[in-house]
Length: 139
Image (cartoon, rainbow, N blue to C red):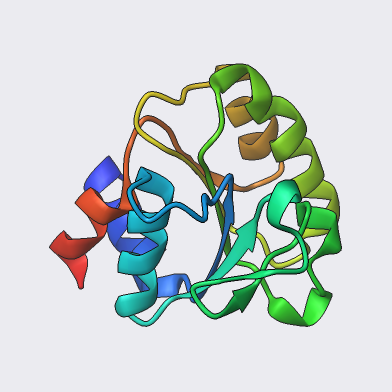
């Protein structure tokens, strides 16, 4: 299956997206991507330890992926973190999110070791891409 088919499947099957590193600042890329995804009908779950307990885009902010209630059924984790910070995020996602299908790393974010670990567990991984750029082709 080519990358286009993979992204089309992700768009079709994803309903809830945890966004790691979601900024409360509206001029930041993470905020714009989250707002776009929300406007397209996806539920976003903000992850930002400095904002935990507050609300961003009408959703409760969690300090980390482990704090998300299981009934949230997170399908995808979108990572806005430096490449070297991705490994622990992926480890936590694999341990804490039973419904996880996709790990998505934003433009400029590549961590092949973390990607391979996720793929070995049957998780789809997209690196160095932005859903705000890729998703409109399939919506």
